[in-house]
Image (tube, rainbow, N blue to C red; front, side, top):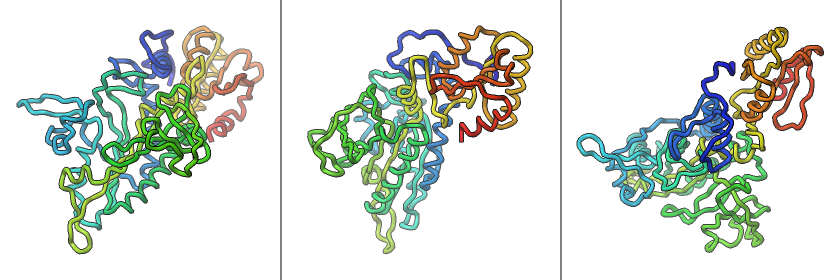
Length: 416
C-alpha cells in the first residue's frame, strides 16, 4: 500500500483520551472514535484486528470448534426465558415495529442454546462446540479505556455442549491450553500470562480469567509465582491461598483481562428445556461451557503493553504490514530504487506500507514509529552509495546498513 493512497492518516495529537491505546491508535490512524465506547476500525486497524481474529480462529478450529455467525439482534422471549431480560444491567433493550421488544446481544447464550437444540437430540450428537467472532453490545454506564471497555466490541465466543460433567471438564482443559497457545502467538509474554480464579457468579464457584500482568492493569490479582496462577481480589475472602498448590505467599499484581472461561452447567439448557436421549433412550440434561476472547480488547492490550513513548510496537504476528518502506530526498535515483524494492517485496509476498509522500524525513520517521510496523527500510542517496538500505527493527535502539542483494531473504528470516 502506498501511503499517499492510504485512506487514513496520522494526526499529531488527540483530545479527550483516557488511555494509551486510545491515544496511539487514534493518532496512528488505526481507529476513529464515533462516540464514547464506539469506534470505526480504519484500514490499518482492521488489518490488525483481522490478524488477531485469524490466530484465534485457527486455534479454536484445532480443538473442534465449528464457526457460525449468529444475529446480534434477539427477541425479548429468549432473554425472558433465562430470566436475564429484567436482571442484566448492561442489556440494550429496543422497541421494534409492532411495539415488539428486542435486545442487542452482549453475549450469545440466549441465541446459541436454542440454536444447538435444533441439531442435538441424542448422546451420539455430543459433544459439540460452536463459536463465532461477532460484534457485541453492552450498555456500559461509563465506557472507558479506549477499545478495552466499549459499548460495541468484537468478541469470539465459543460454546461447548456435553453429556456429563466429566466430558465438560475434559474439554475445558483442552480449550484452556488452546488459549495459552493463542496468547503466545499474539505476542504476549508467557511469563506474564496468569490463569486467574474469579467468581463464577450464578454458574459455579469459580470461573477462570486469563490475565496479562501489567502496571497499567485495572484488575488486582494475588499471584502464585510457583504455579503461575492467580486469584482475583474480588474473591480473595474465599480463597487466601493458591488454589492449585496451597501456597500462602501470594504476590499482589495488576493485570489486564484478555479472556475468560466458564462452566455454565445446565443454567441455559434448563431454561430452554434442552435434553438429549442417552443410550437407554432416557432424557438427560445437556451440560454447557463457554469461552470468550475479545479481539478488539486484545488489540488495545497489545498497545498498552508494547508501546513506547513514540508509538506502537506491533508483534510480528499481527502487524498491519511487514515492512514500512521509506524513501528520503527528492532525487530520482532514490525514488526509482524504492519503487523497484516495493515491487520486489510485493512479488515475494511481503506486505509493505510504502511512504512515497513528498514529506520531510523527520515527519516520515515520526509516523513510522507511531504506526509501529516491526521493520523499517529506508532508501536514500546515502544508502544507494553502498547499494544498501537502512534496516531498523522497531524494537531495536539503532539502525544498520544492509545490502540490497540478499535483502528479501533477510526479511523472510526476520519473520520466520
